[in-house]
Structure formats: structure tokens, C-alpha cells
Length: 209
Image (tube, rainbow, N blue to C red):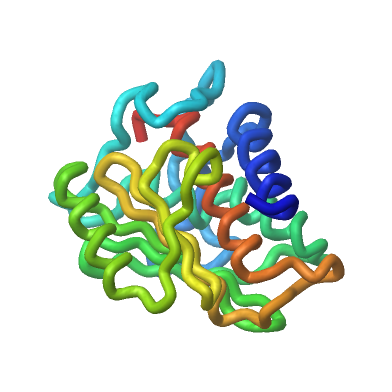
């Protein structure tokens, strides 16, 4: 693991241990600034392992996404993205719910960033979907060691990071952005990884969503 990856792991672990998590998010099909979904109750602490906490609830048998999926279009990833890229204002977002997949698209000046959550009926089905996506992805590389935070995970050369937790498969796709972005020249992979761990921190903090 090189120095850059060590720094990313450190940032991810710090996010899991220290950051708060807001669960507010726009309803499916709406843009930024619309009415927010009900927020989750605040937790009293942060878990730091995959096995701790109750599994996240999926909404595969309902007409809409779960609160856990809605979090990807909520305050915490939005604030993290704004901070990383030092944006002057929060980017516009649109979202959709299709085939049990909630997708939030962040519109940046340089291109689009997509964060999606596939909701499966159970953990085994989610893992099967994750493995299939990994097998089909071009230039996919497993994220191993401390960097995966205890979850099945991989990244692609094009700038995507994919994690599987409980009955969810999270994908942060930065392939629509330049190779480096923002005043600090953050790479697509670094951006995708940092946003992924921010969302995982939300899910760990609010395991009942």
C-alpha cells in the first residue's frame, strides 16, 4: 500500500470514527432543494466493524427506496463532496428509483458523478450481484486490507468504487469526471473512495434504516 492509499485509509477510518451523519435526502425523482425525506434518529456512537450493528433494511418489496439508499443524496455526502472539491455552492442533483436501484446524480461543472444503491432481497443475493458486477467490470481491482473497511469492495481504473454491505451494493461512479478534479487535483478513484466511505459511515451509524 503506497503513501497515498495509506492517507485515504486514514481519512476513511477517521470519517467512520468521528463524523456525524445526516439522513435527510430528496425524494426519488426530485432535484436538490426539494422537500426532504424524514430523517433518521441520531445514533449515540459509531461502529467500526462490518459485523457490528443490525443489518440495514432493504425496500425491495416496497414501492420506493429505503432511507439507507436515500442517504446517498443526503447532507453528508453532499457536504463531503463540496469540501473535497472546495465548491462555492452545493451542486444540483437528480435521482431515480428503477429496478430496485436508487441513483443520485450530482451535476458538476466538469461532468456528472453518480452514486447508486442496488437493494437486494437479502445479503446472499446482494453478494451474488456484487460478484457479477465485479466480473463484468473492466480493469476491476479488489480493494483489500484496511482500505475495504471489512466489506467486499473493488475499484475500476475508470474511477468507480463499489462496496457490498448487508443487502445493499453501493457504487460511486466518477468515470464521467476528468482524471483529476478540484484545486487539489483529486483523482477520480480517490473521490469515489472517499465518498463511499462517507456513505458507509452513515450506514454504520444508522443500521436500522
